[in-house]
Length: 482
Image 1 (tube, rainbow, N blue to C red):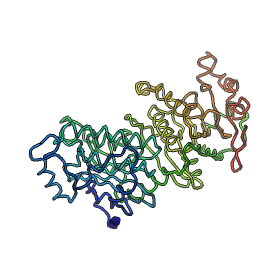
Image 2: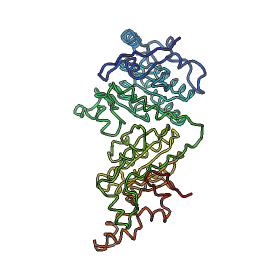
Image 3: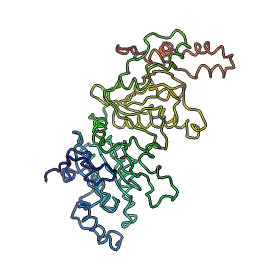
Image 4: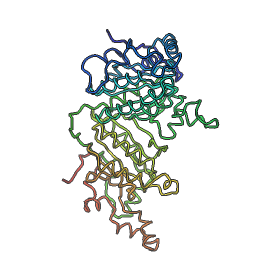
């Protein structure tokens, strides 16, 4: 059978698309039958879930009228199940594509749905392809009871196998995405994109509390709470997916360690500070180049992730993936503000994702320190910093760090790669801010400048102490020490 070519027309502006409209919105072409052709990965299911297979009358529970409901759903939608799975091309990248048809019993997950999803994940592993899910579902199928609910374990298990194989998973959450479909294919993806106005949440509209704030269950509300990476209008979805697939689909040899990212050139002053306090003043200067300037100069193009998946977003931490000299490099960049727990957790998420995909990481260090207010403590500042330390310490992919401004204590050190830290001439790194050091030592405020010198926080001091590998000048290759 020949492959099906996606229609060229633009899909409706509303978020509630049919499965095939959703496919047409993103895919250059797709072939449903090709997904089941050729060798199957070890442990993949047989052909259950393929059209035409016999099963029990009215399903595993003998739910009276279930067969009739499915017949009406087939007549209404033209589909024989709630998902379409296919091999597809998106911007020249081959993917395994999963699209939910909400018109078929609310896009619910039953046993045959689970069969198809398991086969799709297995084929993605066999072919070494990313999985892109276009989700619109109301959850598990009641007419199949616990046999339906248990499909979530199957899906989660398959997703974990693909994650271990280093294959990216991208979810597009459409309207609506609730229940187990959100809690597995949606929230479990590496990158989560939502359509504007889509209803998204574990609780569907008929089971949530009557006084619940509807914004919390919207794409925009979930993005604000750190659960989505972006809200993407339908007319930009195809281009956004193309960029993400280009960034995350990285050819590599098994067990090969990628080449480390080179540190950026310095964008600020060229000369080194004369005193410790001079270094502090330079790093705190309002006009000093910040993370955005470095990211813009370093990358040809980039996409960002957002949120810690625990309910928090820190706008002072920029994380994502970019292209430089034809290859992908991940980045986590502090923006000069006190880093909040959500920022540390987002950075740790970024490092672990890049490590799993075999992508080198660049971190830009620039913070007066970790946020130390009561809200930060309640949000688990210590645990978030500890997790970031652990993510960098355990990464197999190389991490390169550049100190571009303030290096305030442990909040800055958490983003600094052990043994691979460089510094710009307008930066400093200190065990504690000079003002706080003077206060702890009960010194006169007039001794702050002297204290800054004693702390030896200048870039040249850091190099002499062995804290950094080199000081990056503008426009020249980076000098380094073995």
